[in-house]
Amino acid sequence: MTSSDSEAWDKGKWHRRHRRAEGERLKVAGTEYVPQSHHEHSSTWTMDKDGKQYFDAARYPRDMRK
Image (cartoon, rainbow, N blue to C red):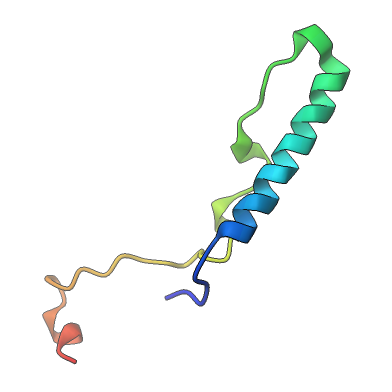
């Protein structure tokens, strides 16, 4: 259901964006720094493997015949 084999590139880009943003926030906030969740900098819906779904072969045996 998806054309991508890996999300490694997407995850790397996501975490680089998170580290860069957190570093900037740390410089500005100083001792009042409170870390943000890494989910605020990206979404799994925008990654290459979005659309991957689970297929239960026991539930749909007719579709597994070949």
